[in-house]
Amino acid sequence: MVIGILIALQINNWNEERKERRIEARYLQNLKIDLKNDSLALLEIKAHRVNTAHAAKTLLNIANSGHIEDVYKVDSLYWAIGIWWEFIPNDNTFQELISSGNLNIIRDEKIKKSLLKLSKDNEQIVVDRDHMRREYDQYLYDQMVSTVSFLKSKDPDQFNEQWESWFYSNRGVISTNKEKLTAEYEKLLNNPVFINGVALAGGNSVYLVSVYDRVLDDISELIERIDKALQE
Image 1 (cartoon, one colour):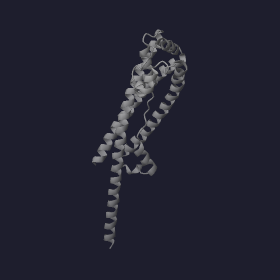
Image 2: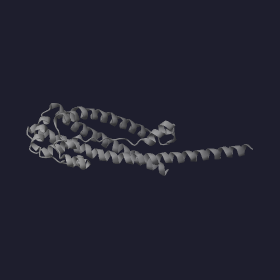
Image 3: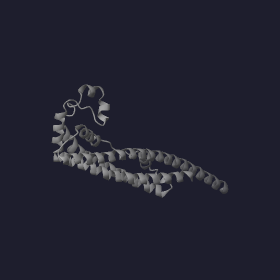
Image 4: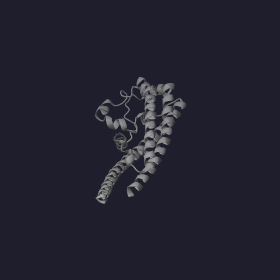
């Protein structure tokens, strides 16, 4: 009788453990998917930040020269800097682990510690991103719209019909108001608030690239640990 009860308890414990291992495997697989998506997003925004840093440096050099030789180039550089992209972490699985209290179902302590560290890094990225966005609004966007009538200086028909391709083009479509636009951009490049904004955009982009690189390395190591745990 006692032996039968003990065997039943062992079978029950074994079944519970198998159930937990299936749940753990599902979480690990979903974490891996989230992390791979984050890697792709970080690589994309890293390329954007590198481009922003180069564009900011070039625009600052033009501003220091005191003369605009090619307003098309200045217009293109502004949009290369001014288009706003942001990284939004794919942390749905991690948040589910936390809210459900199932984080302890992950047996590998290093995976849990890495997930918690990555969560803090992502929170810091959001803080830095929001700070940078406020600088964009105050130093770049506000100064731009108060100085350059860029919508009027574009071809209005083409703008209305093909606004998306215009917005993402390298040069845009600048109308015959070239002299007016040149004068307005020269005024903008003599605005210390705007120039400080360009410098901050470039410097912050360089900083964020270094942050993205560190997070990408951490994600790569974490995926390796998850793969190993899934094979056990």
